[in-house]
View (cartoon, rainbow, N blue to C red):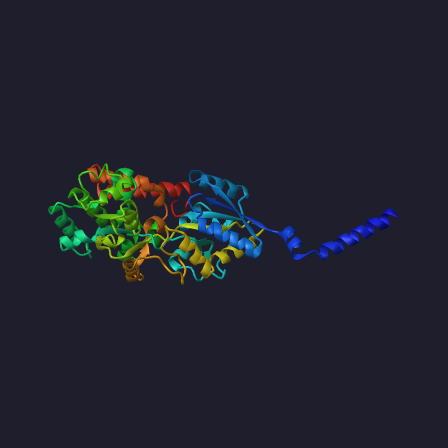
Length: 431
């Protein structure tokens, strides 16, 4: 009798489960995607989109946020032990993809996803290894570019126009200095800002010597042998020697940038394209429209320096929920969700997808449009083992300013450190 009752109970239970309402069955089958991300990379806009995604699909996103100073070590440990989250954040850039994340082993190929062909090619290339796309760069990597910001009123007063060559740049700086205006603010003391004048001009180096990046990455060429790089550093040294950075460049700080530029005593500052907005925030009487921009003209450069690498979403190859993770990335890249994300983030101008309504000022939009086909990738992203030695390059350039190193010495030191990094990474191109 007990056996009959037990069989009947099991049968009824099976029928009951089969006939459960959608909500109950859904609750039992609910998927939660874990996503490890650097604290600096997660924006409120994505948090809101994740809630919307859960409402629409029932798939929840568990953001596992790690402080920036601990992030890479935590991620590397989890990848090495096979315990990574379903999704993980990382900086794109071909070197980082290979050396830091080993995406061919640890990430899912996303080349055939609906959004893959829509992403800006110059951005997608930084998430691609051997022709396969491994990440979604969900960040403004195209709107924030390092350019020379200039005070329009000061330029008008001295009858100046944005320069097209280094000779023109040098001449206008001298005219400003002779007129009692410091040409440029350059905060050397932080150790990193003055380095930008060098690797950011990667597009110009590539223009002067087509294929140089590939040769540098395969150890067939060296920085020390490139004449355009030597020209860039020689001109940068000349700018310092002529006093174009002012008397206090070695002690000036990046933190004081808006204060330094607020009173019109300095005409230009090499900063990101959003600098006029930062200046307006700190000094409301200064309008962003009072400022213009032009590309860094050292070595006669007229190409826009783009750093298309940025915070990127990867799907862990060992995840049990790859299909759901792909669904989430597809959701994020829907046109309406891209726009929502962009509109919610005050620090973003645009996203690397077509159809979004950008937040550029008319003048900045015209500048970006004018360089749409005249741009290239900066060398700290394009060339292996450069970004990792940024602060060391800063020390070298400072030594160049003070006369204890030459421009050629700086390039030689870069090559030596690249070789050391490559040897440590067991790069087959450095035997």
